[in-house]
Amino acid sequence: MATTIKDIARQAGVSAATVSKVLNRKDQFISEETREKIWSLVKELDYTPNSIARSLITRSSRVIGIIVPDILNAYFTELVRACDQAARERGYSTILCNSDSDPAKETSHLTFLASHGVDGIVLAASDLIPDARLLEKLRIPLVSMDREVPDLDCLAARIDTDYETGAYLSASHLIRNGHRRIAFVSGNPLASNTRIRRAGFERAHCEAGLPVDPDLIECGAFNHRFGLMATRTLLDRTRFTAMCCMSDMLAMGAMVGLREHGLSVPDDCAVMGFDNIYIAPLLVRPLSTIERRISEAGSLAIGAMIDFLDDPERPRRTVLMEPTVILRETT
Image 1 (cartoon, rainbow, N blue to C red):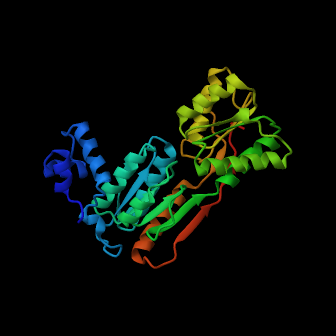
Image 2 (cartoon, rainbow, N blue to C red):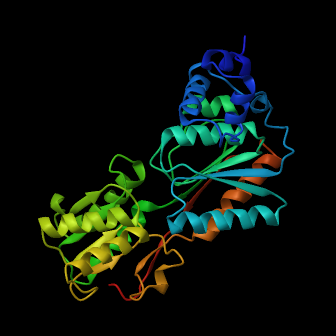
Image 3 (cartoon, rainbow, N blue to C red):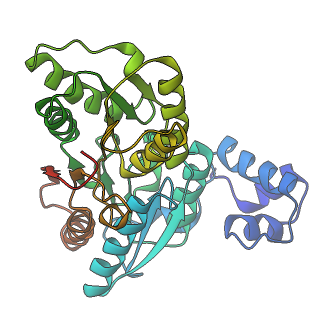
């Protein structure tokens, strides 16, 4: 027999109304301890709200959920704006959720969006690999953007960037400009999108007959805070004349770190970013970077989602966005 809200309430020692408020995010007056207990039981008892069990064919809300790992990262801000605009142009609305790259938060957001009847969910780039069992149970159409997701029937499309080529182009440009010791700064070292970027960076070095010094590699997160910390660590450890930063936010943090050490960009150290966020050309020293066509990617993701909703039998789309080099004043 399927688990009900009453089952969860009984085991949590609270009322069914309290459980309902937590599941529906109307829990501002409920203690953190109670919320955690209820969400733990939801997972333990394999609870699925009734509305999640609807078929893929029943689509009436005209709402698409979007889950991003870090809305403070301007890349995701720009991406969400593009998704929302594309959705509205086709008569849909969007709901935004921010996961902070936290598996528990992402699971909570997926369940929340599904229980509120969204027609589909866009899962934007993150170091996380979603729980395949949960996605199969939710049966909500998905579009993945720049991240690994299981190959499920509900996967409407994959919208990815050719990270390997982007990193290759970034390092190759710096090598052509005479740099021989180039730092590489990227996200989680265990994530596939970091491994792919590093492969492109190393390929450029291999073709130029240059070794890759492990002391020049720092991987952790794609935000400006890690860019700053990584630059401090690199400067304390070794010397270099250029940096390949695998996001523009990393590059901005790196430039702060270089400035702290009295180094000038690009005279003392050249810096390449990755993304071409809208802030990149507005900096005091406009940032050289890798163009990812963020708005186009968001529009493609929503278009692929709505096309799938209109016809779930159509072939799944896989789009690999080709990056290009944008040269400004930091290289």
